[in-house]
Amino acid sequence: MAIKGENRKLGFKGERLAAATLRKKGYKILKRNYKCPFGEIDIIAQKGDVVCFVEVKTRSSDYFGAPNEAVNAERRRRYRNSARYYFSGSDPDVTVRFDIVEVTKGEGVNHIENAF
Image (cartoon, rainbow, N blue to C red; front, side, top):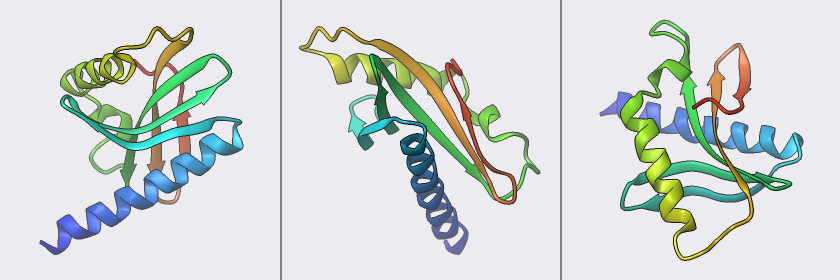
């Protein structure tokens, strides 16, 4: 159980760093940890007319590969469905984008725009 708790703390820290990085880049954070029937979106952010659904992947090392490699086809599908759900009942005049923010200990934060 200790490993799971440590991973959760690492993930929360990564999400805080990702949100701070996005704010520095001029994004407004609309939601964090948005839950819906399709899953959870780590961060929903907006800059101008672009709304980004952001998956944050935090790793203590790249031993198991780059963090973005963990965003598989199933996760991408859930993000797309969650975005549809988020906008259901409205007709927003925005561009939707799916980003990944990688947070790796010792290497910092890498924002991958339009990742999928």
